[in-house]
Structure formats: structure tokens, C-alpha cells
Image (cartoon, rainbow, N blue to C red; front, side, top):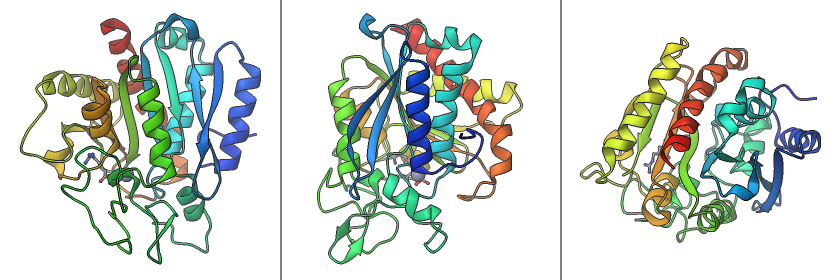
Length: 301
Ligand code: 0X9
Ligand code: ZN
């Protein structure tokens, strides 16, 4: 079996998803979305007590950046809690949770192999004799206008040859577009630094006119985490932190029209290599933040 409070391989995560879908056919559906550049399957976990009700959707993705292992761990932990908590009935009713736990499985597996660079960030596609694109610079909204490299050999922020050059970002785009009407909240989980940021990310000079709603829900999330002993989030627009275009948060908000859109940077201290034994402390704390998001979406839509 698999321990949701540890770091798991992409294959082990897929096995776990099969197991929970089999055990809870009333609650969990798996949708094959496609495959990564190297052919790893990417499946969306749909958790719903009433799939035909047309409930608002919360879409959570994680692991677009290979080295940010705590992100897929968090996504899996959310799945685990939604399915196994007796009291999660409240978190489930009236909201459909769509979760894609590993957006960049090729990069993730690359960093798990001890012969490779643990701090690899990008995908593993090949462009002009170098490897990988920064998935979070590859989305087609204000693409490449700030905070990117045009050099395929840049190890951090290469935006790709064109928007959505990567199969992995195409897959996330398709999930958003196909569910655009019902999708009310999007969270992309990353690490690190304890930031919870909202659009715009491409610039720090302007805010969306709805920024106060984005800001106040983020602060409510942070408060809930603090109440259970967790670290608060620094809340601001992504572009105020640092401008970087082509992120999934801006695409969801600006191109798809998802009213609440966030990038969540988990943990502070240890940078990208967050110690596995600490997961059992922080993942349950962060989960309280997701509950607050669920409650808001249930109330508002
Ligand atoms: O730079 C990023 O992609 C994110 N930080 S990370 O350290 N995980 O790489 C922040 C993205 C915030 N959103 C936008 N700039 N659109
Ligand atoms: Zn990241």
C-alpha cells in the first residue's frame, strides 16, 4: 500500500488512485486526460457525491514543477481526506473536487532518480538540444511578456517555443476549457515560501477589479491554517511578489474566466527539499485551508 504522508512515485500514486476508485465507485471517478511527453498517463480524479447535479467545481493541480515534491503529496492528501473522513461529507456536498496530483510526471520521476538532479524544475521535452520547458511559463495568456527566458537551455524559466508547446500544459488547459462553466476555483499547488497569490502574475502594476474577493478568501484560508497551528500565508497578487507571465493561475482567471484562481506555495524552510517526516504535521494543517475554499464555493455558487 501507499502512505499518503510520504513522498510517492508516480506509479504508486496511480495504483492508489485505482484502489480508491474501486473502493468508492459512488464517489470517485478517474478520467484519462492523456499522456506526458515521455508517455506517462495523466488522470483526473473527480470526487463528487452527485456528478449529475452540475455542482460548482474546484480544480486542484500540483507538481507542474518537478522538484516541488510537497505539492503532489498535498494533492494526494486532499484526495485521501475527502474520501476517508466521516466528517468530510460536509466538504463534499454541493461541490465537485477535480484533482490532478502530478502535472509534470516526467520531471517528477526524473528528480526521484538519485542519479539525476533533485532540483530539476521543467518538463522533459527536447527543444534545440536542451531539455524541458517551465510549465508555469507555457500557458497562453500574456505569454512570455515578463519573467521568462527565451533560451531552451535556461534551466529555470524557459517559456517554450510557443504557448502550450507541452502536452502537460495542453492537458490542464483542456480540463479548464471543458469545465469552464462550472469551474469556480482553481488552485495550483507549488512550493516553497508560504505564499498564497492570485492574479495578475504577469505584472505587479495592475490588479483585477475583483482583487478584494481573491484577497479576502486567501486571508480566510491563511487564518484557518493558523488556527490549527500552521504557518500563515503571505497573501498578495503573484505579480507583486514577482512578475512572471504564462502561469496557469493567470490563464484560468484571465482566459477561462475562473472567478477564484490561486497559486499556493507550501512550506517555509528547507526550500524544495522538505523533510518527509514533517508531512504528517503540515499536510493536515494545510487541509483546513482547502476546507475553507470548499465552504466559500458552496456558499457563493
Ligand atoms: O514562478 C513560479 O512559477 C511560481 N513560483 S515557484 O517558486 N513555485 O516557481 C509562482 C507563480 C505565480 N504565478 C504567476 N507568476 N503567474
Ligand atoms: Zn513551482
